[in-house]
Length: 305
Image 1 (cartoon, helix red, strand yellow):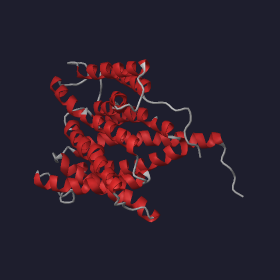
Image 2 (cartoon, rainbow, N blue to C red):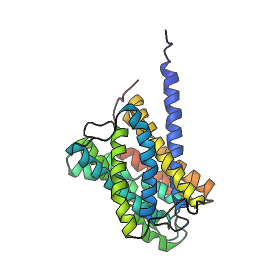
Image 3 (cartoon, rainbow, N blue to C red):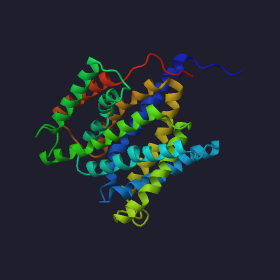
Image 4 (cartoon, rainbow, N blue to C red):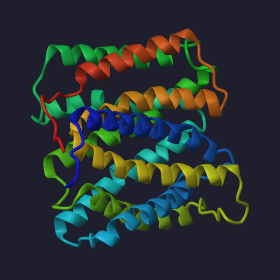
């Protein structure tokens, strides 16, 4: 007869998984910056990133006999999520991170809940709340502090790329609202993302070819190509683990990894890239995370298992 795992022990295990998720996802930011070091165009990088994601997610789906679904809702899901979850945000990410510090990009990516909140209110999917409005204002002050001349960015000209960097969180917010409203067309999350990755791969290949950004990573495989492969595989594996954690411990519990991702992204940027930041960045970080905490939706209970 199997021995039941105590609730407290299971909780500590979930916390350990949450920490690993945050540390791993945070590492994808500096790895992404390293991947741009050889001057590869964003669509070429996205193509090979999706190749790795398709291989990893396919390896998780196919043994469970949960491959591609070709219903109309599923195909619509693939196209929307491929565009909003990969093609557009990743293109702007690679363009931005080649010019902005990786630690700053780690902060910007955590702004997704603050962008999603006013959109959700407009669409009638969330209720207005004064505390959440306060969180939105704190996030705005944080971004303004990042853009202030001489405050955080080592070069004032970098501030021109902050609006481009914000396109990614905007797309992720729109993607989240789409999934919240329409679901995943009856597919489990890993299966759904496998299909979206395949759709993105099909879509980005002609763009990479027509723009001259396609490249052969094996022709001169170096640090940039290794960073791209590592970042892509890490993202795919961690996403699968995130889905497992959300099922076992609840979506609200799993979503707390966003705080760890931001801090871990800054830590990895300092360790791997040697980035150093002024005190104003830490003030901006506190304001941003406080804003995210106020804006993010809450639930009393998540799934337990």
